[in-house]
Amino acid sequence: MKDNKKILFCLLGSFILVLLKTFVYYEAGMSFIDTSIIGGNLYNTFIRFIINLFSFSGFVLTIVFAIILIINNINLKK
Image 1 (tube, rainbow, N blue to C red):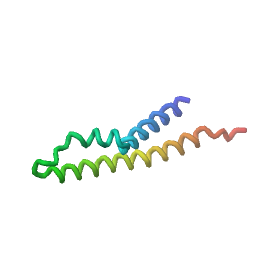
Image 2 (image 1 turned 180 degrees about the horizontal axis):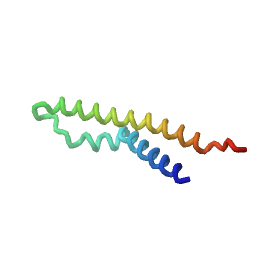
Image 3 (image 1 turned 30 degrees about the horizontal axis):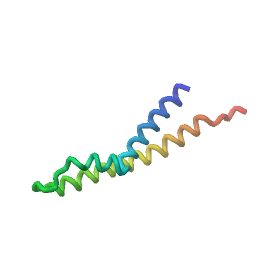
Image 4 (image 1 turned 180 degrees about the vertical axis):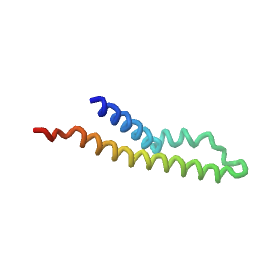
């Protein structure tokens, strides 16, 4: 049971990374960037790339941890 609790926390953390791509969090994170300054557009593009990368890694980790959790809970001793 203790192992399942750790995997559930990992799954929750991965799901939170996936939520970075939702509209509310994405716009809240991008609202502090001023594109009128020199290099602002490059900075904006870089930040968007980092957010997309974290969101994709969260998506992959969510799938991996869900599969691990399912495999751990299969009772093969029937």
